[in-house]
Image (spheres, rainbow, N blue to C red):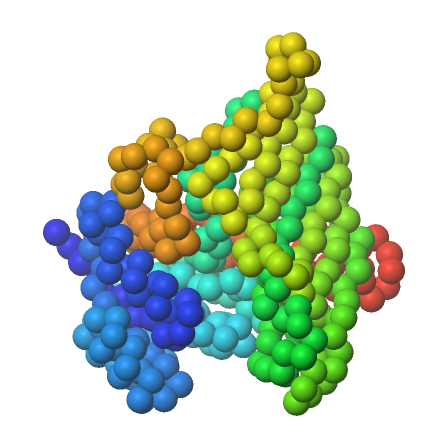
Length: 367
């Protein structure tokens, strides 16, 4: 059974998640290609060695360039800060190595476009790491919409709401400076990705982006706390997207609702193993949203568990993502969401920022 040497740049929150996923994916999905944790890179030799020891890598380094250049590292996962993504990706692509890059694709629209150009020119398999849309429930929702289960679509509402900075007395930290670290760079890409996946391209936006808690103990906040976006899809359908890091009480509020002429769909990541489906059929007195618990009949559920309703978790979405990346490596073909799909999200967020600054509807194509 062939293996592939995996190098991960970054061993923090997402670096660990990807390392765990690569350790488990072969057993869960019985993949033909088996990942080998070859090398991890961190900002210091001490951290890199700790990640190596804890996660099971063969080697560690404090130099990402050493990791990318190493011949035993055959594919690269980028889980480092956004302003490092372009340099790492371009170095790996130049060596013909497949790349899985955490979202957002880059810290600027120019860097995101450069990454897409490099990957497509080289023909190297590439992916942007949007994991939430990969839950069995959301995959099922995408199928329902594609099959016309709720008729012609008429409205979309999406959100990603958390409360990790809801308390104004929370001290200033790295998330409080730099556009890429704000709500628009950190949280908004997820519901935008969901909107694109479920509804198709967004043509124009009107938006308000706001910093609510400008002063925090230790510093002045230079980025946004939340954003509200009105959008129009290429299909003509209108929608609304909200993202926030100050939504008191919300922990993982990645949620959406889609209305159609024959029904509606609701989903909330805080209850990620259920989808709510309404069908406009039968006597009015008997109509209502029906809660469908995910199980082996739904996409990518059975490899984790044979029991309906037993559920999958956050880490499992990263394992599904790892399976997709291995498939891309094996076939040599990029798999959704590619760098270009990551760029599509970046273009919408860029248009949102412009719309907020001008107070006008902004066509996405203008950015």
